[in-house]
Structures are given as structure tokens and as C-alpha cells.
Length: 509
Image (tube, rainbow, N blue to C red; front, side):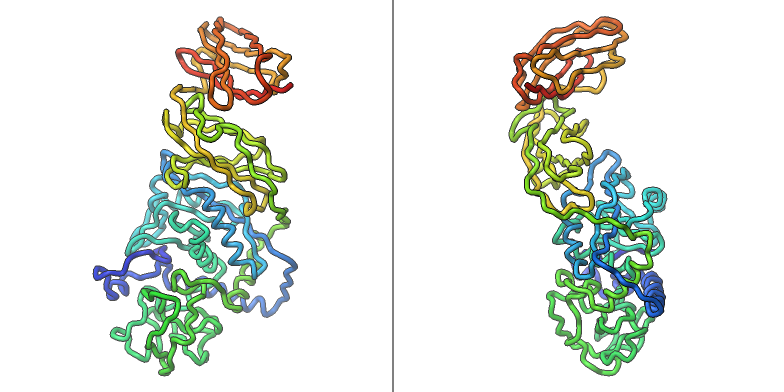
């Protein structure tokens, strides 16, 4: 079973229309589309015998699964996912449907699936099924974002699987401008076939199919007529999506002017809906038809597991997350363990923190969600003496579309920090926060005595205090005066020959 949709490739002499006919342009097969069409027809029949009254906006949960390689690399930029989600809500707003993140991103490490999530067909990756089935969650639309999706003619941009009821997107289309692919795939999820159903992979060509076009499409379904006499069963089964025999394929603009005639000899071009989300006029899409919207509503009404009572706070944030450490351009005390601190934003219930080597966050970003406090540490993703960029975005439950993103740069130090010094069994640093009138208790339990240096760094990465200390076998409590420290945040670093322990403290007055 081939899973390719919206294949991105350059049309050249290497790929003739004969080759397209043999291998297929759209990899969501005709058989798969007939499955969702049958579901749509059943929903339509059910809706005719019932009354569905929707009051207000329906909020639909999405679970994003972000694939990365086994080493944690080659993942999508998290902010682009959020921007795409917000653009998606614009596309569905006139239907009183809005989408929200059910939970934070689910990070899935698999180089194999990241490179090829196809299940079935010529590009089948059997391992992908075991991984993706295990990650799929109930009560949400599952969307997997991968680095690549191999297709017959190049890279597929996205697909919907009726068998597994999930969507897959290629990383390159994840952005607000690229949302057209996700809007299209969700159309399939909600039972919308292509308006050119039957011509999938074999666009009308006068030299091949003749003119007028044949009564039956190359794939079997009836060719839709301009007069609408067979619209309830031909092609996609919608009467307000006008005949389209895959005219968008290779068409250079959003105004189709071809000479195709329908099987009755009637000119087709004037009725082609280049702006329909389910057509293939790339870059032109901006609308669903009323019948398509009714089918989406009927399918969503039938998917009760997606119904929620969420009523998100849509009030915009009035402030940004001011970054405290590292501040712009400053050097961190350590290079492999870096703590990030920012000011709380009123109304935020969580934060997304992202780090990358490039200011565009398109190189190899790392990310973490922070649901408690305004501090997070990243470990093992940095090289020494290098410039990095970090940004933080405030979030609200069900609402990720407000709040500006703040981004600054920093430079990593050259000192290596570790989570454990081999002699240390347990340690505490208290109190925290601490008044400048108190002494900091550094309590360490060891299995062997060792010498160390206790360094105190400010938020600019400058060492402002250094104390030698010896920790004997057993439990040792070392008191460190902070009376000479100004109010603010500091990094306590306990450095020995075998490693470094670090802790953030807050000094108050």
C-alpha cells in the first residue's frame, strides 16, 4: 500500500507522462480514497437522518510526534510546528473548528523512521509500523513529522493513512506558508477525496486520453460531467467540486485555461476550482466548498473521541519572556551543561525553550517544554567555545498562537561539567533561595575524600568568588558566605579532578 501525497519533484524529460501513469503521481491510492469516500457517503446518510447542532467552536486535539535520528539530530524546528498549527486554525476558522496541542511534542528517536515512515508500497519500511503504532495516542489526531518521505518520483510532502488513521508530514512543509499540505491532509482525514479521483497519477492528456475525455477515468471511477448529472457518484462524490481531471499537475499558475472537454464534449476549464484545498494547484489553495465543509463536520461529529470541553484562554500575552541567563553574547561557565533562566510571563502555563547553532533555528535545534518554573538545563548538546542561540516562547493551555518569541545568542565555555563526581554519593545545596544574611550549606556525602574548588559565577559567566574545599569520607557540610553577593541569580560550581557539579541559586535581600 503506497502512501505518497503531494509529491514534490521537478518535471523534466526524465519523467514522462507514461512513467507517471505506471507509478502514480499521488501515492494515496485510488483504493484508499474509495475507502474514505465510502465513509463520507455513510456519514452523509447518517446526517440526513439526524440533527447535529454545534454551538460555538469545536476544539480538536492534535498530538505531534517529532521524529529525530538516534543521536537526537535531524528534527523539525518546534516554533515552525506551532506557527503551522496557528495557520491551520486560520484555514478551518470559518467552519468553527480549531485545533490545539493535546500534549507537548512527543519526541521519537529513530533514524530509520525519520528517513522513511512509509508502511507498504514500493518504499515500504516494515520497522516504521512497529514504531509508529507504539507511539500513537488515543483521543487526538496523530501527526508524525519526519525528515523525509520517499516517493516514486522524489520526496513526498505528506500523506494520510486510512489504515492507521494518522498523518505524516515531511519536515520541509512544516511552516505557516507550508500549511497547505496539512490542511489538505486533514481534508483526507475528514473523508475528502481528491476532486480528480480516478485520474490520480495520470493527469488528462489529449494525446493519451483523447478529447473529449473518456467516460471512465483511467483509475476506474466515472469521469465527472460539467452538467452535474453524475456528480453524486463520479469522482469525489461532491456536486459543488467541479470537474477536475488532475489539471493542476504541472500547471504553472492559478488560472487553468486548457482545452479539455468532458465526455459530453463540454468545455471544462471555466469551472475548474484552482483554489480548492483538495485540488493540485500548488500555492493556489484557499477554500473548501460547502459540501466539503458539510462532510468534514459530519465526520468530526462521528469521531466522538476527538470531542473535548476545552475552552482556552485566548487573551494575548502582554509581555515577552525576558531572558536572564545566558544574556545576549555572554559566555557560560560550562560548555556541556547550560542552565537557562527567564522572567515569568503573566498568564503563561508553560514555556517552550529551543536552542540551535543558527539564529534561524534550522540547523539542528534542541527543545524542551517547561511546565513548572522559569529555568531549564540542557546537557550534552553543546560543543565548547561555540556560539549558540536560544529562545523561549510562553504558552497557554490550548493556546499557542499568542506571545512573541525572544531570541538571543550566547557562547559556551571550555569547562566540562558532569552530573556526578564519582566520589559523591549524594549532595544538597541549601537554602535556595537564600538571604544574603545567611550562609549556604553545601552538604556532600562521599565514599572517598577529595579536594575541590567551589566557584561562584554571575549571570554574565564571570567568576566572582573562588573557595578551596576538602570533602572527607562520609558527610561533610561546607558553609559558604554569600554576604558579598548582590541580589540575583548565581551558578555554584563544585569542581574536582573527576568532574563538576553545578547548581543555580537565588540570593535575596
